[in-house]
Each structure stands twice: as C-alpha cells, then as structure tokens.
Length: 167
Image 1 (spheres, one colour):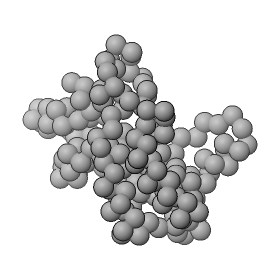
Image 2 (cartoon, rainbow, N blue to C red; image 1 turned 135 degrees about the horizontal axis):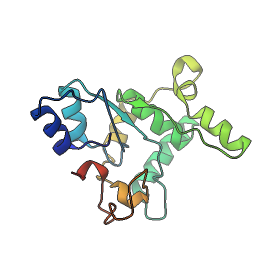
Image 3 (tube, one colour; image 1 turned 60 degrees about the horizontal axis):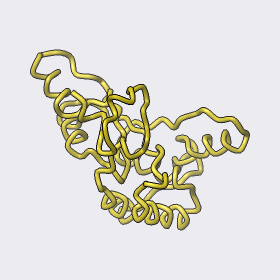
Image 4 (cartoon, one colour; image 1 turned 60 degrees about the vertical axis):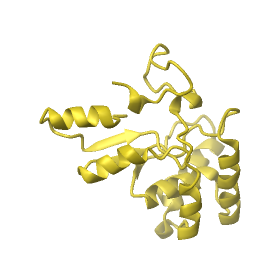
C-alpha cells in the first residue's frame, strides 16, 4: 500500500476497513517507526522489502559498513541479515524472485525464509545485533534509492521523496 500516517488516518476517520497489510519500504536505515507504530496499534500487519536497493553509490555508506560487519560475522549475505532483521521485527517479508542467472537464483533462495530461519539451517540475530541494526535509522528515503515501483517520474520529485508521504 505504501500508506503513511495521513492516508491511514484518513481511512480510519472515514470509517472504512483498514488494510490488512501495509507494505512499505523498511530497513534499518529507514524504520518508519511512526507508521509501524500506527499499524501495530490498529491491527494492520506490516510488510516490507528490507533487502531492497540500499547499497547504491549514494547509499548510506557508514550504515552499510556496519551491516556488512554483522553479515561477515554471521557468515551470511547482507540481504540475509536484512531479511532476518525484518522477520525478527515481526514484519511480513517476501524476497523478490526475478533472476537471469543460476547464481542469482541461488542467492535469492538463500535469502528467502528457509535461508534465514533457524529451522531451515539459518541463523538468528542476537539482541545486541538487533539493537545495532535498529540504531542505523537515518530515515533514508525511497527517492534516494532511485526506486519507482509504479510511481511516475513526476511523483518522485526529489531524493527526499517517500511514497508514504504521498497524499
């Protein structure tokens, strides 16, 4: 949905059914804590793409380095750590599945639920690691990611643009 507080409050005030899931761009770099809190308080599940395009040239380099250290320590990919972070936060997280090569398809499988869940031979982030990741929030906006996901170029007006701000 990419609903921010404005849209969510408007839906609620109009007496309409709330969405079952609000899928937003979430990562340790942009936790949308206000939207997540609203959803949790109103029975709306939160879905995310935590592994999204976060490492671009203009990406949060200091935060990315911290994530890389945790991934290296765990012997996992950064994407796997991001998926595990989202699962431990209680978010619905479904990794993207388009791939042109066998190597990419294997990486996607490793970054799926089975690749990060303890039952699937995966791993768990410690309380300390979760706190470190949670402290990386810099409200990194989707506009800086160069992501459009169905939005027109005219909608994405600046690097500070975020679909949850769209009303």
